[in-house]
Image (cartoon, rainbow, N blue to C red; front, side, top):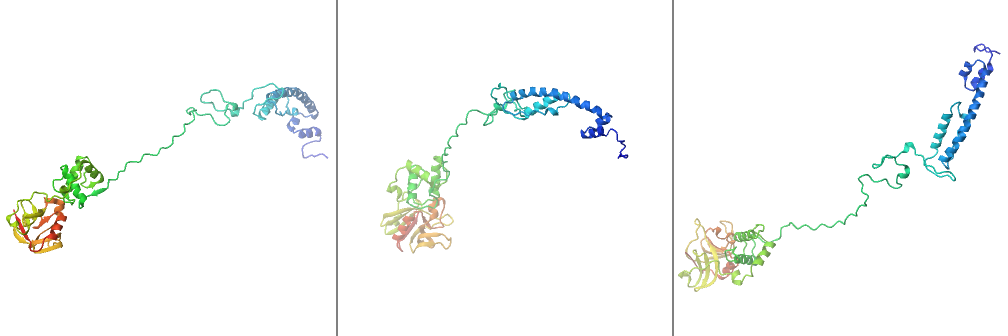
Length: 379
């Protein structure tokens, strides 16, 4: 039957069907007679036949350029009419895509390896030509322009730093308030070189501290007034060992001529003029010591008295101060040891008592004096 709805009258069916089979509907429409299309397809055959020799010629070139590589030969049937140049370009691109490493085929002439355009190395800092893969190092990149080619020298062994000198102050051996035979030796040695103007007492008071400061300042030592190890060693190097008479002299000051009332019996003979006390028995001096007296507002009374009370560890109820080895002779006035006198010397005064600064001497005196012994205070 004839399909009357398609607009086709049944003629030329073979030509329209052939155009659909070869996907050339537009070409069939342009050529009404389907029989004319056959000569055109036959003309294509000579074109493919001409392209074949070109492909065969290109094959030896590819084998020579890329030895050992299998080259894909393009299908000669796929060549289009009149496109010989395009076929050769496709073959060349296919050859470049098959490999990039150089090699030498047996019996083939040696050729330079092709350079891949997309993998050209960056120019070297010192070269202008591009660098190939063979020029690149296999193990490590080349050093930069500022890198040194000399191997680094081994680091020197770290030396242990020298110990810093100690900044701790030297230990203090004697200071204000100390009382010992070493203090007595310190005072005797300071007196040898003119820094201590009195006889040693064994008590480290303000007078001794001032003498130590004077010694330290003259020797460019820290002026502290305390005797540290360095100060003591420097003093030992500059002085000699004190003699017994230098360590324990009878008194700091020369004894005054005794009052005639002191020449008989057991008497504490006290001179305000020489500021000394002499313990005398029948006109003979048994011991002597330095003393100080009360101020003008609390003066020590003068005259002839007797010891009426002894108190070894006495404490003043009026002034709340210690009065060890007290020998009372007139009311509240007594002969006793004074730590203030030992520390400050004649810079101070008592409240009327007779102060002694040598503790050992006054302790020995306390043991020898008896209640009822005479006391003479005079100028």
